[in-house]
Figure (cartoon, rainbow, N blue to C red):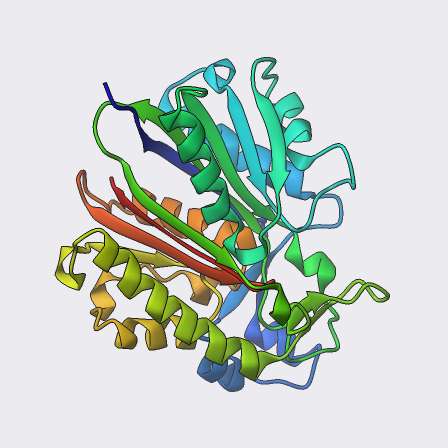
Length: 312
């Protein structure tokens, strides 16, 4: 019998501290109105000094494991998508495994920037379909504000911290329908972390244009290769980078606003954590129903991009 991978539960964690646009007005030359107009972001969560990407991943994972009603030791694979590991090594994934007291899984990190969660889903899906794993913990966790120059008004207003988790289980009925991932390293300098200063540098206008074109094309191609139309889609859960990018992509594919899960206004850009955070938000608010057709879509530094089409 053919095996499929299916999302059986989700979880999330957001740090307690909230930084509003009004707070940022006191820190840098910007305004609430300018940030809203350019990004759609009203506030973002900021991890405290002693709170790491592992700590946030742990809280979100405990939440997801409880929601799945399983023991943590049934998880036989842990993938953590992050660009902000607690340590150079060992990986965030094995540190998380230790905190979860799991002695069964194999665990590793994956870095595809903002597309990391989709890359991780692709790997998890492959392992489940090939019968190597039955339960996979897929985590996106970022302390991205640790990479910010708080005097750079073009980047410091964009990002926030948090962690989101999906647990995938082996299923006899379809869950993940298709995954598409890609990258192009020739754009490496348009969105990067400066190796000397260790802060994010971004060519905002270039990133915006390429992101909209790439994501619009990717969404259309994902539906086409699965013989679906935009009417087949119940929800688009995109990477939460910027409301202008999300809305521009929706216009390109003629997707109604009411079919988009949007959390960027309260979360900011949480990089690899943004899609699982938005997914758990939708789950927690009972927006997603059984058998809904959902598309995840992301674009990130590299450039990297990816989409996942699934039945819930």
